Image 1 (tube, rainbow, N blue to C red):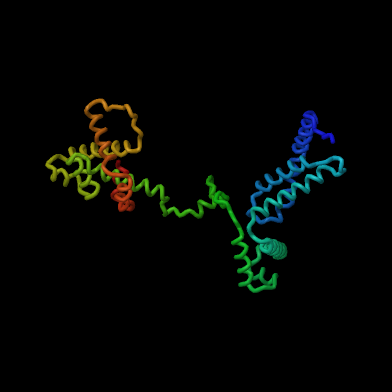
Image 2: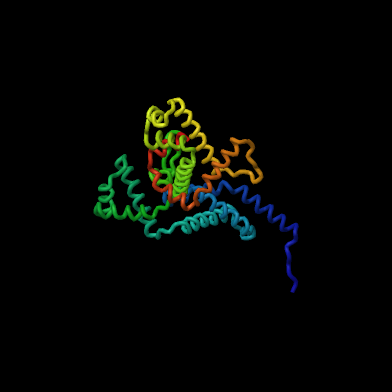
Length: 301
């Protein structure tokens, strides 16, 4: 029995027809989304409905058979509407009874708002529905639990700033685990860097920042002038900054320090990194997170 094959020319022609139908009827998708969106909960993303409807339009163009005598617009409208409803049902975990309840409460609220000229109270809603206020609150709680919002859902606009759901839910007082680990490591590097400073510079840093001594007291203790104490503090802070910064910068494998000062800086940075393992640094820095003195020192560095 001979088989009928579609010629390349016919296939190209069919593809052109499908493309033309899709392009000409794209506005139909937005029109149907506008019609059906009023029946869905407010949290349903309209853009998602448009995408689902567009896929329905593509499927309608592929399956359309002009010989059936049905206009494409009517055929496509049914496909688009069905695709939108299927997409919403697939993404919605709440049972139909909950959605039916939501529509009922919305209808009652709109009817009362039209009659009263304002948003009705819970007691007025309960009276209209013929239920107790406590029962209405229980039904509303059930509806609220059925609402799913994405973290990037826009909840408010304040001036030039847009607040999303994650901005509202995030606890600014809690440090992210990765940030906390990085902070612990940084504080441990700071402690090791201070311990490896030359003795007189170390005494100045510890005395000034950790023991809160004045420059006059440190000058008297070290037997030098206050200006010399200030100079040693500046030199020590610069050494700490360079030494800690080196721990986060990848040095070239063939880079060799040139000059006495460069070699001294490289040796100091290497000593900081080799002083302890990562796990030990994390443990060492645990008790320093909330130290205001340490934060002041870090700011100086």
